[in-house]
Length: 104
Image: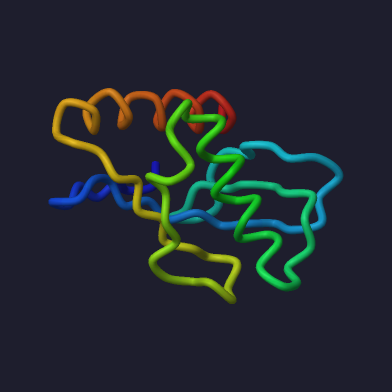
């Protein structure tokens, strides 16, 4: 299972993005990253925008609370999900539930 890093701002996760997929989906784990398939092409920031929008929707979290902190032009992206301590505990469980069931 990829590592969820708690910071003073929230939770940092690593996501491996596969652009130009036939559909948007959480696709389990890829190495030490969570895998995300997206329909958007990796051109003009389209895949990055869809990555944040889709993750926010799946996590039931405000899109404005998600930010790509590293990997803007790479398939491997580091994403910060802003939350307070109580919210982070619930969010951590939600992330694990969503990605673990896809990996099984």
